[in-house]
Amino acid sequence: MKRYTVEKISKFIKVRDWGKFHTNENIAKSICIESAELLECFQWGDVADTNAYIDELADVLTYAYIMCINNNLDPDEIVLNKLDRTDKKYPVDKFYGSSRKYNK
Image (cartoon, rainbow, N blue to C red; front, side, top):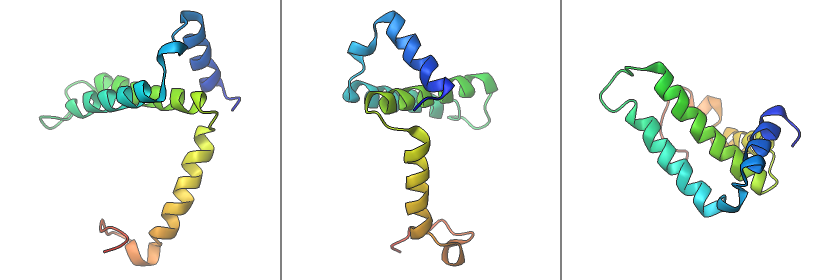
């Protein structure tokens, strides 16, 4: 995991000595909280402030990166692995244009 974003986040946390607060439980809670704030941007229809939802999305992604950093996971690798598994569950020929679940 030697990408610029990971290194930048790691340094940001280290110089502030915040790592001690970043348990998996706390980070998972933070992801949920920030996800709710992202959803709030869309609560009443169209987004009034595009920057608001972009900032909230950045917060969600940052906490997800922190969880990867803390658990020595490569974010690209885990996303691509999950995408491969999902691709097998939802083959194009059976699910094109459909939102039904794979077991329905």
